[in-house]
Image (cartoon, rainbow, N blue to C red; front, side):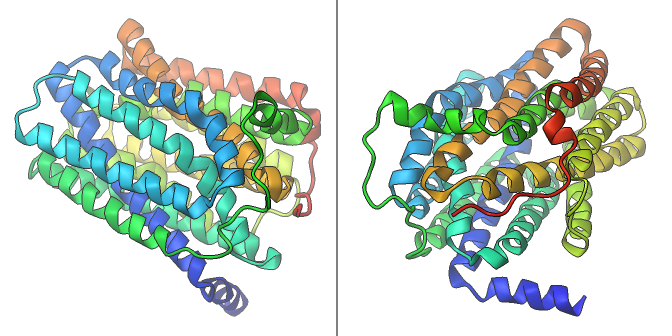
Length: 412
C-alpha cells in the first residue's frame, strides 16, 4: 500500500496532470448532472420513450460526422486548447438550456438542437483529451496516470447523477446553472495545461482524405485493437439500458427523479470499486480473457436489470454492470494508447471514439426504438442476450485478442 501511495504521489507531482484530471473531472461531473435533467425533462414534456433514444441520436450524428477531422486536429494542434474550447462550448449549451427552461420549455426540438451542438463538441474533445495524457507524464508513470484519471471519471459518474437528481427537485434551471459553472471552471483548468500538450508532429499535415483515414487504416492493421474496440461497440450498443432508465424509474420501479439519479450512479459505484481493485492489483496476465469476461458479465447484469422489479436488486445489477464495463474499458484504453505512436494517436483515438460514441448514443437510440416497439423490459432483455452472443462470436473472429496474455510496450 505504501508503494502504491508513493507511486500515485509521483504522478501528482506533475502540475499539468493535476490540471488535466481536475478539468476532466469537473466537465464529466457537469455532464452527468445534466444527463439526469435532460432525460427527465424530455420524458416529462413528451412522455415518449422514443424521444429518450432521439437524445442519443441527436448527439451521435454530428459526433460521427466530425470525429475524423477532430482526430486530425488533435494530431496537428494544441490538444489542451481544443479541449478548453469544447468545455467552453458546453457552458454555452448549459446556458441555452437554462434560458429556455426559465422561459417555459414546452417542446422537445430545442433540446435536440442543443444536444447536436454538444455532440459536435464532444467529437473534438474525445480524441484530443484521450491522446493528451501520454504527453503529460513520463512513460513509467503513464499506467498510474491512466488509473488515476479513470478513477476520477468514475467518481464523477458516481456522484454526478445523484447530485443531478437532488438538484432537479429544485427545478431544472438550478441543474443547468450548476452545469454551466462547472464547465467554465473545467475550461479554466484545461487552459492552464502548458508545454507538453503539443502533439508530436512538428509540421502540420494538410487535411486530406488520406490523413483522415490514416487512423482507421492503422486500427485495421492491429487486430487486437480492432477486436477490443469493436467488441466494446457491439456489446454496449446492444446491451445498454442507460437511455431507458427514466422509463424504468418512472413506470416500473416508481422511484422518481431522485431514484433515477441513484440508478445512474450505480454503474459508477461498480466501476469505481473495480478501478480501485485494478489500481491495487492491475491486470498483467490473461488480458484477453479479462476483456471477454468483463463483456460477458456486462450482458448477464443487463439481463438481471431487465427482469428486476425491485429497486435494490436493480441497483445491485447496475453496480455489477459498471464493474464489468470497467474491466473492458481499462483493457481497451491501454491497448489503444500503448500500441499507438504519438504522431497518429489523435486519429487513432478518433476511431476509438467513433466506436465508443456509437455504443453510447447509437445504443441509446436503439434502446428507445426497441422500447417503443416491444416495451422497456423486452428491449433490455433482448440487448442482454445479444451482448452474450456477440461475446461468443468475437472469440472466433479475433482469436489473437482472446488468447492475448500481456499488454504491449508503449510506442513512442
